Length: 81
Image (cartoon, rainbow, N blue to C red; front, side):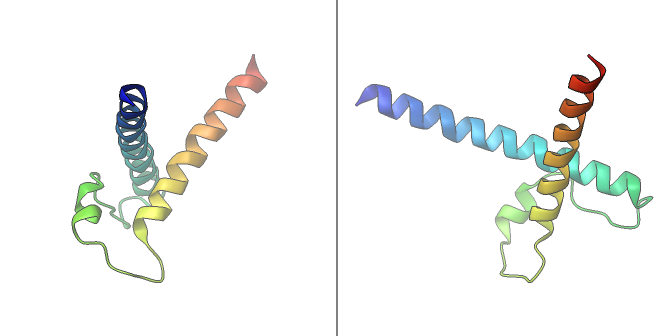
């Protein structure tokens, strides 16, 4: 039972850290490519505090852009190696 609890705690912390890194990267990439016209908050905690049902959730957009950035970076590293 203790092992299950430790594994669950590890995955919760890992998920929070990974989601923060991916969101932050996506928000920065969007801000760079739109020349600052679209400003997502750099900390996803503001979205966690005021979650509303929206047609287009900005958290998902920044998260997906961050994921794609790291996926393309990984693909470029493999291609160049």
